[in-house]
Amino acid sequence: MRHIDWSPPDLHVPWGQALREGAVAGTAAGLLPTLVLAALGRRHGGPTGPINAVSHWLWGDESLRQDRATLRHTAIGLVTQQLAAILWATLYSAVYGHREEAKELPNAIAGGIATSATAYVVDYTITPEPLTPGYERRVDGKEMFAVYAVLAAGFTLGALALRGAGRR
Image (cartoon, rainbow, N blue to C red):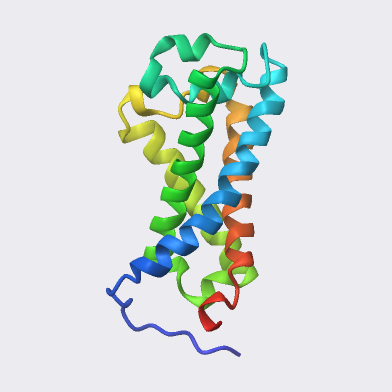
């Protein structure tokens, strides 16, 4: 049986490690929902429609209606989606994910789900509407669940890929 450490968490945040791990886990976490959004977009006018919608923070409502791939909408949507995933992964790593036990399968799954759920709650409760992801205007509720589920899977895969990285 494994010993559970009930001591309070270390308040020293290893920001260098959190940034490195956030880049790895966030990249994995950002790619999977982008692929799902493209697949869902095919059912709703075009594969880049939901990705374009992410750029609405910069280009406004025109991004929410754009189905074609454009440098203006698609590139900004892709970069925004990726940076948001890296941000969430970095914050998770700083809080808990930097610990080696967070990279073990059950904990990595729990961490991925917790990070994705936190992102969803923040995105749709306290984030002002012009800064929400935008794809919620292009896909339905069940599809949104799928997007955030694969986001959780991406965070999990990223954490698993980082196992042992702190010891190298």
